[in-house]
Image (cartoon, rainbow, N blue to C red; front, side, top):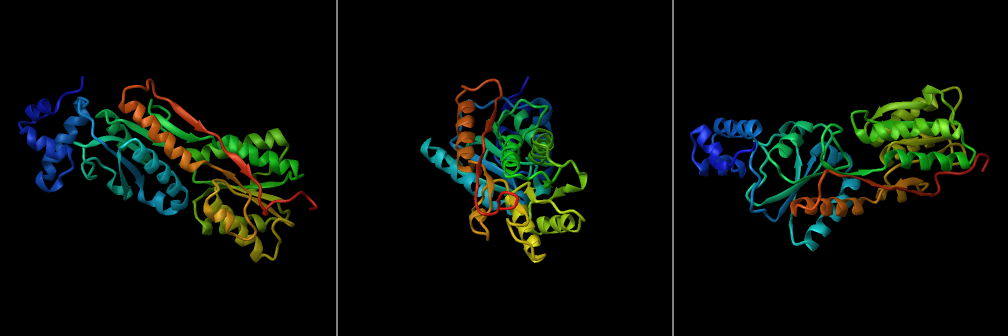
Length: 331
């Protein structure tokens, strides 16, 4: 059974004020050794849920992830801020360096913390610590399969199926796929969608047409596409894990003197602002990013108000946006 702040203080022979300062993230007033002991006790015994809920919501993201995909997350953050303001809550943005994802190092104001919305890939332990001390929590574009935690997710596999169905309708069967970092659940799901599409739409099953573990950067798409372009038999279309990789692939195609979409059609995923700025404009799968942020806040507020049990996984549908980077075979 979870313990109270007073019980933690008694177990460690500390004052309640010291425990309170540590849990409030006031690093300059509590020694590192004491902070560590307090958080170890919290992990071991749990922490009794506070009766007084604050009015601040923390958005937590890995700094590397945000730097790589800021266009994607900016719209999500916009939706989060909009819904929190409407609901009279305060928004706190936390972009954390990967090695510092530790409750003893992150300055979350626990006294005023109503809940956390988190995007992550590498931080399951951090998420489980938040869950253990009963902080209301919603994960966004990320989940832990073994844990019952409220989550808002993109319907990744369905988005890829929509893209491949469209390419198939244009007569494309030899389609290359530039897959994302396999550590990311979204990359796993989109790759699954592509494999299913190969079966459903009769796409070429040549393994060399799939390039694994592309990071979400244009240079990664450029390098991956150059590998595809070195093949004896070229694809007629390429589908990328996201728009940044797709734009890098477009640069590689154009540098080889090939035409987009006459020689090779290109499709991305996410529909970030860049997709409608490149030449030619990129056909892509639209993700309702602002809406995802709003849904995450709505889910979190239901938890805070005790209205959402058990944990719920919300799948957000996508839609195809056809632009100039795709055409029919022979078009």
